[in-house]
Image (tube, rainbow, N blue to C red; front, side, top):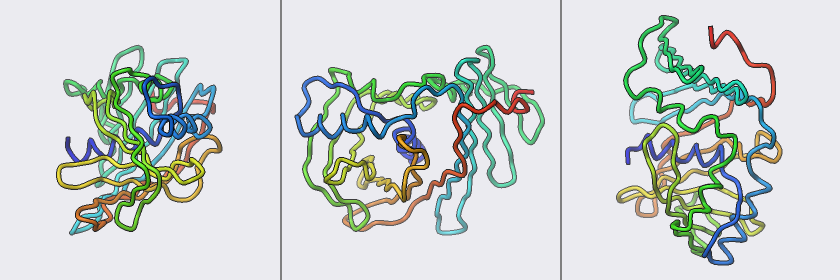
Length: 245
């Protein structure tokens, strides 16, 4: 799994995680995961317009990418606008057809590009996938990752189905405080862990939209890898039609 895929896993969980019912799960793990129902995706979403800024910290200059995702669930339309290093790329899907433009110039979408929209119209949550009877879910007790994330941990291994990444399974560890609030999550990598720590209060009441700091933790030492900040989030507002012209 590449670092980008690990990062997207964290963001996908952050955006869509919610509670559900589970089979053959440790009672403590069940209680913590079911508690996510009150922290889950906003209900009755017809449209979504969100903009996020990701800063990846490197030894040289930081790499800053801004991504805007606009989804019209009832109209089955979506647009993803990415801006990085002076280049703006827009991908759209309308009536099942994917188109692409770079700096305002239309061009054929590369093969496989439509996979970026896989599952994007599913207004439910990845919590539904946790009902998979083949998933392995355990309660790990109190854990600590360097000095950046500590709490009660639940580990999940199974089908996460991250849209656009052709990644059917992975392991994610959820870390909660004593009151059951999700503090962050961890995706294990080879020889290290990518630790995502939620920052501040949720951007939307009743939904898991948090800013986050992401660290690479190796041998008890944490190194800041990236930061993600929500610039704006709106639900059920009129769609920006200019994105589909």
